[in-house]
Length: 140
Figure (tube, one colour):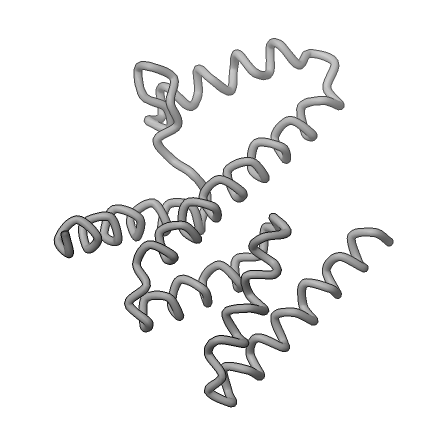
């Protein structure tokens, strides 16, 4: 029930943001989407819209902030889902070892054990982050 209430709250804020955008009230739309981002919700729509709006406004530092926050939130969500899946297993240690071996051999982890692949939207946002950082550097 708690998840349903949270989902409805997120949707309500996103709907208000969409309506503000349709009325060309960009400041209000940003305010609504920022509400979901500040709350730390893993809501791709709010992050994507904020990135687009900040890019259109040429507010690259705000865009970079939203990208970084989105990457952090979605990586944490992905890791928490994996931990939740593994916590119910009796052979947790063996499963983690097998998972690490598979990920290393398939190229999903590098030699240092760092992940080379993240589920969407994280990969897309990592690429976007590099572009925004370049834009900010070129403006200096």
